[in-house]
Image 1 (tube, one colour):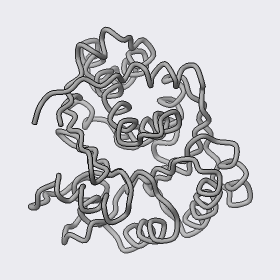
Image 2 (spheres, rainbow, N blue to C red; image 1 turned 45 degrees about the horizontal axis):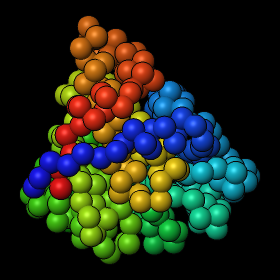
Image 3 (cartoon, rainbow, N blue to C red; image 1 turned 120 degrees about the horizontal axis):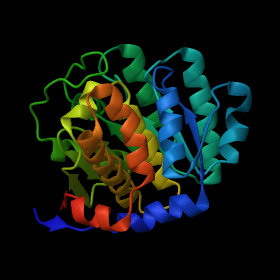
Length: 267
């Protein structure tokens, strides 16, 4: 692998200038955090879960983020409606497979969405993505369990099969569309000490995908920005509580010099 430099600031500027609407059907535990992170990046979050308005909201949005973290059958129905509308409009659909592999409802719901709608980016931790790729793994609630197989191969396999971009988040992030891969080594262990950073990452990916057609570049750029902000926030924080507070300020103040100097991206 060789280190590369991505022009992530160019996408951040697009987000800030275009202020895209990012429609969410997301996790009730982290919904506030997801809305906030989209807002501080400069975009406009909307959290519309009702089946009666899901199609209309997707039709006026620039990206759709689906997160199965607090799943019900009614929510899956709304996700199907929203994704159909998004597919018709041609905007990217991001699926955060939160807890896939832990229960049949979560796994089957993800597969139903993937099989019946066009999902452009599938995001999850190692065991969630491995489960959707057909590997025999068990997810610990919404936390990743150990996966014995090569994660880069799993990501590529799923991306090629589903004709999408796959994102595996972890100690290092893998972004793969079946033909091109990015490895991102930014971030900090403090991100694992608070609930919500994984869900927030999916929202950030959706925000950047809203302004960039190259979805693997968009996903990688969003993760770089989010995780560099986390590295900066740790330096100002006293612990998990103040870290969460500081990360929003650090996102808001990201600049080109910082992003160019701190990114750790490999191909």
